[in-house]
Length: 399
Image (cartoon, rainbow, N blue to C red):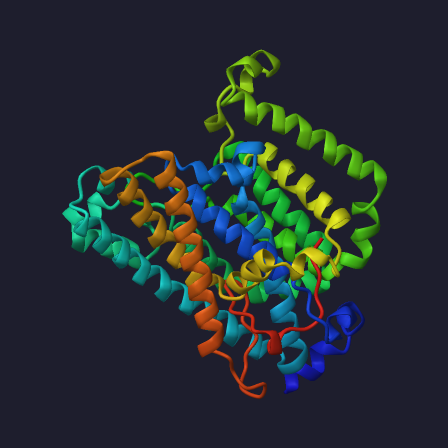
């Protein structure tokens, strides 16, 4: 109680917008849609991925998911700080980090079991689980310290690290928001120049370098806390025009990677998609996501009617249970890959695998909502990966 009294008073004005009782469903809708897109993108050679951002620009659903995660963390932990003080913030960030860590360990084991049941072979190589099957002891040791990750699980270790550090990050954002964002940008720039990363095993590669991708989480948290100051600039017509032009430019480039006649229109440096470094969040990817965020700020208002449609309601349901649904999506992508590889990789099967997978995610999220509703007095604010139930939410906005 003491730290609550000494810290909340100077910053009360900064968090006034968090006192409302409304619920901005766009956060859950964006996160749920991103989870669907991530699942579709995780299945190799899947026609369903043509419904995702990946084929129409430089960025994909991963950027959306990371940014929304930062928004949600700032929202959730800010309320915890206001109501219970910094001790509670630290306790809950550590607890959530532990939850995600345990989920990562269980997911890694589940992936290995699936690959083993499939007979290993090509799937073991493509999923980066062969080394786990061949050298279990050493690999599990590196799993425990987050240095080894099967394919498609890299997001979880990042969030383990970010939650460990989010309490001091929030403290800085509440006091020196622009300086904190500037420091995050500086770290991102140093990664681009010097290729900095954190240790990984066995090849030293992260699919999502935490030192680069931290920027999107910090940016999302900064936007949540500074929205009133930033929104007039983001919603200016000049910024909208620049965003549209950049999205059109990236659309032509992305389509040229798959449509041969368009190749003559693109610069040589952008001839291949792998040249845009996803691991270190290439600046062109970052700019593409920011352009999408500008359009969302313009055309997806808080009271957007689309949120009441059945599809968006399903997305919201998945977004409210993002940790279990993300893990389920990884396993479903493994299973889908096995089906396409062992049974048939025809268009009809690709569509069936995509639809069945998303239906399973929706059904699981719906079931989780039905069995895990908590009383108001016992519910806890859970951040990303959160399971934000309606009764625990307060006023918040994105874009």
